[in-house]
Length: 242
Image: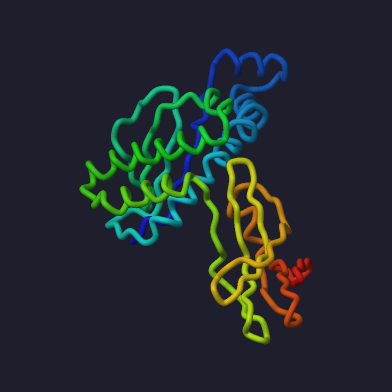
């Protein structure tokens, strides 16, 4: 088994006074009020927002770490809480869950650069705890944390699939710039020295792999000077010319 993913989530916190207020306003049961509270006040403007704004560094960590073999863990879930109620690491179906105390409201008002640093520190502290408890080798993680800081928290990379031009002089590629609030997708053309000679922004999307992956389909050259990409349905096509 390999560690493949780190997810960072806010744990929903039920507050009795708020639930009772919702019950009164909506003439509903306690359970129905909890659902309303979650859907209206938590799901998008807290839980989903926090997940998206930490995804930049979490995905960078996953990509740079590469394959790390474990006995029983494929994913680490970091649950953001107001107070730690579970000191131990829980394990279920290959997922480690660990609680982390953080004021998410304070997080939301930070700059994007500060959010990146907070996210990395959060992952580091949780990994250190897991390493100590499970006796993992810390060196691959330390190397990954160092790479992220050396790259100045810039989660930029080329897609693994490339496409050679018919005349073999150029390579068409897809380039990603994953930031806190968005991911930008570019078509680029590089020469034999891997130097970018043309770059074009084609898509701006939510900063989440599931949001942008559907855009990445077939890469083709339609001539010696025009490179293009279709989405996975082949209904949309974006092109770049030399």
